[in-house]
Image (cartoon, rainbow, N blue to C red; front, side):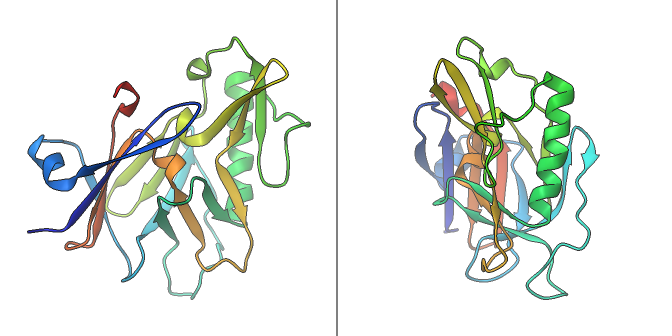
Length: 213
């Protein structure tokens, strides 16, 4: 029998719940539209990152440092890490593109009080429905035509402070001494079905409204 691990990430705004579902049951339910990216190496769940777009603008992927010159630009799926880590200069290029698109769509700029070298944060009124904010359309493009369309729950974490709702980026900047170039964390996979097929050496993704569970 194929060894398949399937994970369902459930969106809960004040806490994150990870629900596990058996891969066989997932198949038996007839779950459709799962797209698969091949795992690049043995021992890690690393996938080829072919590009990132923000409102149809391509983030510059040129001259990204790699472990070896012949290595593809890869992201490692790490469900034990809540945040997504991007190596420089990709982190700055992505965040600069995202901030510009966010300002164009919402007229919001990062709050100078909350912005740090690690996070880019925004603050809105406590009565604002965060799901109604017109965030940029962010897509991570993986090998084999796998496209991860990210929602606000994948891009930000939230809390309330001083009558303001604070939204901070889930994307962290990783220093050069890190073993892997980029990590794709569990917050970015909320409201996705994620299927890890160790026999076929592939990982499948599809969007799912897990918040209704």
